[in-house]
Length: 373
Figure 1 (cartoon, rainbow, N blue to C red):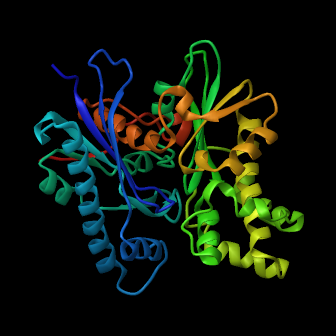
Figure 2: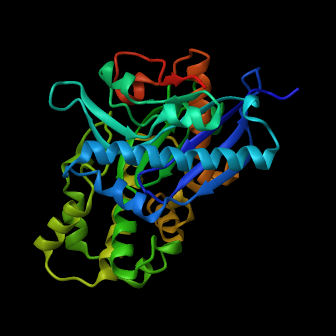
């Protein structure tokens, strides 16, 4: 007899595609076992539309609804691939945890509650797959006065935490977020550090035509520009005390262009090197300021595959063992999808998954809305 199975789906801020996992969760609560991982690229037109929808534009409600439908069809294809690869029917899966594509994230702003928006169509996904879908993970935490992000520290504690030592987990997706995992049984803390790959990918695609800077090789041919880096680091977000979260609402092409206009002409590869240094600084400074006692840092997300970023982190964090999440049994591109399978299970079992120590909400909440098959 199989342990309960859940599927997790993630399309992150990097907009580089959809990751999905099929995972078993033993009923005794002891961790998880990833049975299969599948990926699918986002169609070029859909990727462009999702990126465009991060900003206000003409007819955006109509466009957002259709983009959500299209993304849900990509999700459904990943689910079909996972089931076929494992030889399991849809009925063997308890639920799908589907994050959707974040296009706006403005917690606590405007009216004191703010909003967060992840595009998808969970009802369509349930219809296409025949499996219950759990979605809309962030909004309940916002309703309780929280940031709604990051969502993953409780999962990071479950997977990476150690009883004998404080460790940390760093996800470098489009935005980078850090989880500090104490050894004492205290609640973990976590927050967004700042830009991860979003600006790096944008600048690389603009100047090389490639979707990302493989292994950081192109940026490594450039030189860090100290004045530009100082200007980047002057952004007020970096001085904010957690809880804090961010997204493309702040760190976007316009933000970068404004800084470049102030600093004057620069070689494209030098800007890439400086953006790499910014991501390293944002992540390392976050750990140094808020991760006292952590001597081990597990890195996941696409940034873990960027050799230049990993070397930069190791240099910036002497005395900290910086290593890929693979060392903890979960490859970098599987971590976030597994987290959403884990979150879906918490929702189905009516267990809380948010942490007030992370988001600043009034208390832990059961996250997500269930769309029955």
